[in-house]
Image 1 (cartoon, rainbow, N blue to C red):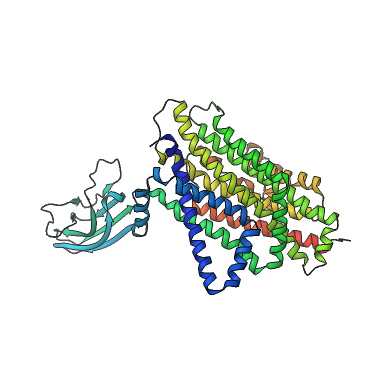
Image 2 (cartoon, rainbow, N blue to C red; image 1 turned 45 degrees about the horizontal axis):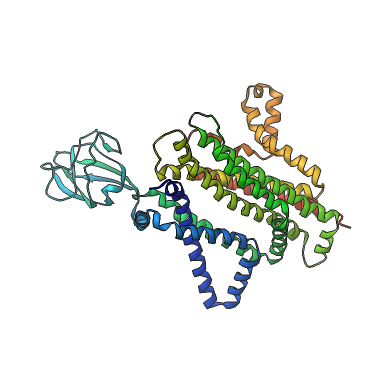
Length: 487
């Protein structure tokens, strides 16, 4: 494999997933065209004029990457592993084998090459085979009573199994019944392909979510689309994106002097950069699209039409979120590319052995949850900014939201620090943690430093927290705006 192929393969895998998602969307649109052409035209218009248009350009670019890079990628391995995904599942069985029973069948379909680990334990000596009539004469695996037979890659215990297995035959020659417990964990030859369906589902989900908002809340969606279009057209959006791209590329070549931890520094710096740029965009957009329109009486003109105040605020909030989504999509892809390239670049600069593409992939997938958490943090601050903008202009909004950003990260640290032993300091810290968002929950520096992955359950709780806090902030914005004199 060339060095280009090594660091590009992780992004190519994600591009394949995005391409599959796009093809499924096209298929769904084709079915809609056959069933209801009017609805199909409305969908095409929504994709062509809203935030989905620039996102579609990104999707097309990813599809082009997936197609053009395929000749130099491990396509056969990827396809074979994708086909095997539905057939790979943990095998957990607990059975009773009677005394002097031979060849008791246990259904267990797996490939020996896909085994990650297995444990067979019994309270009596039992023989495990993959064919009948072998028993203790030619035991494939001999599990002694009270001593589990465990295997994992690198262990001294022989794996025993070879080829495709469909059934296990267990023999118990003792005079007592045996309770046999079997735990087998398998995975496909190339487990990295699990990112493909996730990328496809994310692509489909983004388009479907936008279209649902458009058709279920058309008036709110019109305000959101106009706000998003105006934001993207502003020079600030282009400038922030360009700053992000240039900075992310520059971070690759900056010597951090961390004795082999440059990749971790790149991930931390890049994630903070993207998050800060998104928050700047959110605060600025909230000030210009809410506060300035209220002060300039543009909001009064909008509300003179069949648009309520609730639709106005929620539409503005969504109109701020969509450009943030676009920014995260663009800068996120650049960030993944730079992280993957950094692994190869550091190996070359340190005169180390050229890494495998799987090492690049591991570093890439570990930062994707961090990007999700950074996006959720940006959404919370955007909601707070909208609430503040209903009453205050840009400068106070920036000061208040900036203070909330700092205190939201420090409140938990204050309580845990030595100063937290002081009763008053602990009280203030806990009070801030209750009132202000605990933004420290959206940081993954600890996971980056420990080279560990963020579990999906943590992302789920973070999403729930973000939805609840953002909902509370928007509710506060509605209360502030309900009796605001626009004249």
